[in-house]
Image 1 (cartoon, chains in turn yellow, cyan):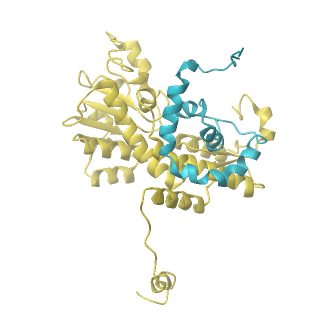
Image 2 (image 1 turned 135 degrees about the vertical axis):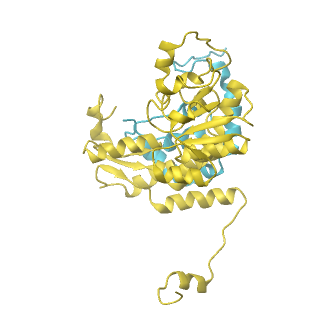
Image 3 (image 1 turned 90 degrees about the horizontal axis):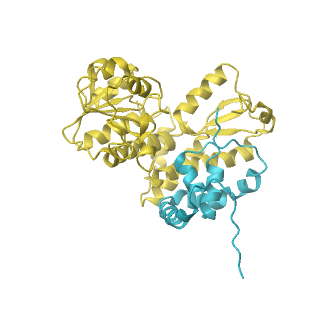
Length: 279
Length: 85
């Protein structure tokens, strides 16, 4: 809104923090086009955010939502996960842990290879559509499940989105073309789209567990503090969170969970910092 | 004789406040890092009101904000400063 309908407020903005993957992608495009008018910090890109919030938060809360909304048994099902970013990894890992056979669809060859070597089947959605029992979209893009896929799906296939607004699944097409719509078969479930295609983990469950948001919120708070102390003079554009903040949050979380780090001996430290020793 | 003042707000059902407070307290127990950095970021509170941040909050975060928990309100005021584009 600051860049569209409320541009008069931009002058008073010092900076901001962005916590979502989709938001950072948008900001990156804005920065590239010179459209971003103040500094933005990509809090999403900290390890303590996306490696945990996206992976373990989305992974767990998505299945929490599926259980609550459908009461379906995951074991023995074929679960198709669209997207193998950190959210997709979390969803696929949990599906596997629950006894499902998991298919991953990806557009990035490295991520697809990663999925394959983690033991998941990898194929285009045009093939997976006919096979899956449960489809979960976590891509950040639109029309991931659409006309050509719906036509191939098994009767009773369950569709859930944990990625991006309500456009990853083309619900509008389904609304228009469904011969019979059995609305509200169960809480937040029409037959068989969860939460109207909106984020299922928020619509049909409680979102991420507080324990994982502990890190994301701490990243935000410490980044805001850093902005106040050192952010003056930052140029408009997209900026990274200082690594020290990321490491502090990880260390504090680790300690709060009763674990501690190993420490390098002086000899090890010297070895790692020297090019004259070893091969 | 005491009187009750009803504050105009967007909270759909204020009667759920006590139930919500328990949920907040439960969540706070699972957020030890935020609790630890509370003092460190207290400085921000002083400035937060002076800075124009655009708040974009998820449903979950709205839920936290609509509570009587001073601690979480303060922390989230800071923590939720994300821009909407």
